[in-house]
Length: 164
Image (cartoon, rainbow, N blue to C red; front, side):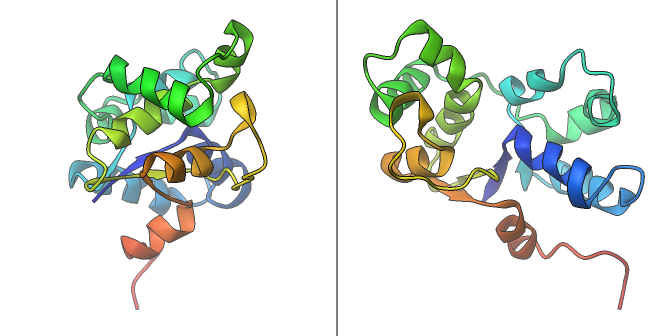
């Protein structure tokens, strides 16, 4: 299983519990898992960090990090359109499509190999939300894509800090 990270996984980890300068083991582990093919970030999600001037933006642009974590494929635009029309709504306005950000690309990459890929996001399910306000876990569920949060991924991949 390849875990595809949503941008919020990295943003929240850095801001709230695994700050890059305080818990470098987590960030090193992500790179190791990336080289092993267990964790990837789609280019459209990586682009969300472009031009940033914080530690996270610097980390994401390091050659070692990019080479380990970047999923080396382009999104299938037919699948992106399917995610938007079937997962959100078939008649979204331009403003609503902009509101979706990179989420349809992330989900489309997982949809291209649903038995081999899982989306990792910290968005909480809110089934009553509609159209552009739908949440990633709900769209994934509707399209038959696996979706977990950071901690489920860490447990599955047996993340540990230090040794016993």
